[in-house]
Image (cartoon, rainbow, N blue to C red; front, side, top):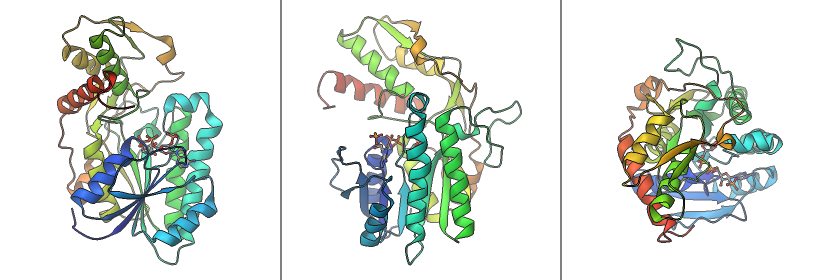
Length: 323
Ligand code: A2R
């Protein structure tokens, strides 16, 4: 990574990825970090200057960008839950599409060209056909859920802004990223939380799970944010880059590994509420494009990230880590 005193802004930094990205930019890259959050959110990280920002307010984005003048912008703000997108599609479309257009349009008004990374999702590929796995960036996208459709739309709009206005905008399709501190609406955090609660004796020894046959591509969040930094520095405007491990693994195998890390005797039951209206059987990234450009490759093993996530939940459910 380049050691540089670049000014960097993370829009939507109060979520799972934001904290890790702040740490990476400050500690590993020595950059000056500015981060935004919604008014009701908290960011406890002394490495960044924090501002309140709702991306539905375009004028607020414009004023903040004029004040901070970042060299690099990471756009993380999103309604990022697939499950919630089914329940509240209108909100998801507002934040992920209109909000992203507000961000892009505010950047367009600047008198200089910052380098911008828009964070999309491997979910954008959706219904992947036999022979399309691992999936490359030029593959057709056939989103299978509302969240994925909004991110595919963000990707297209990013490409249009890059070409129409000659902006330095790159797009990422991030596959599942996991690690300590992720909200339990995501599968690995959900499983680890349940096991930790069973171990503490505050939950019956039954795991409630959704579709175990789906295969997804999991990467530790710390590897993911390293990829983002390399892409904002080296990515080519208008291009999309997959960020993932390159290997799909069945949710059942993740579950088995987490249960095997516990001494408790744990039964497994299907919870109909955790089944999605449409589920895509396999999503696996072809990561040769980012590798060829930057040399990036994931370094943290699945075993390590699962173990650290389980340990995090063990501490959290007994109150050692505040909610
Ligand atoms: O939904 P909340 O209350 O957790 O807030 C999220 C925030 N956010 C917004 N920020 C500004 N203006 C809005 N109108 C707005 N609506 C939501 O963006 C949350 O604090 C942050 C996104 O963080 P997470 O949901 O934890 O996503 P994560 O895992 O950090 O992923 C970052 C990006 C997202 O674009 C994902 O869709 C993608 O990577 O995979």
